[in-house]
Image 1: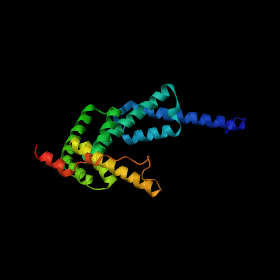
Image 2: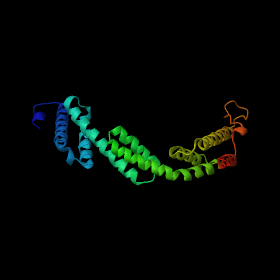
Image 3: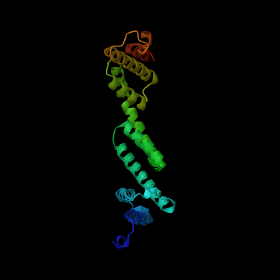
Length: 216
């Protein structure tokens, strides 16, 4: 108010207020970092949220270093929480993503290794089912279901020849869908833009694969 009385421009006042808010936010972070052991994820989330609201991340020098330190701590704690939760479930993709995030965030390698072991056990348990699902999807025409089955099979380590068979079938179905879409729009059957499908001989029957495996 006093500044307004003496004619200080509003934009300068706003900038001054913003600067005070930034310094206050940095001071709060600096104080919190004095006792890292007591920092919970919730507290850090609040500190970063307050700092972001006043643009602390745009600062330079020591203030920016303080901000970066708490953000790194937040990301690490987030990654640890994600890893713990994913390890309790049966979703191989969620756990794999959590492991990758944890690695990037600098989570304790021992915790990552433990999660990796959990992932390997889950993958081994899911492998037989994933294989059956993929073989069944190959015989169908549902592109989305086949794509998902391929991804799961690849993730849990289903043998390459079965996954390759699924990928070939997927390309065929996608090609047929693209050709049908073009035809419905008045495309010429001989158009060069039409998707070239694999030779029929390149699509072995599922029974052929199964027969080969039964001889092993």
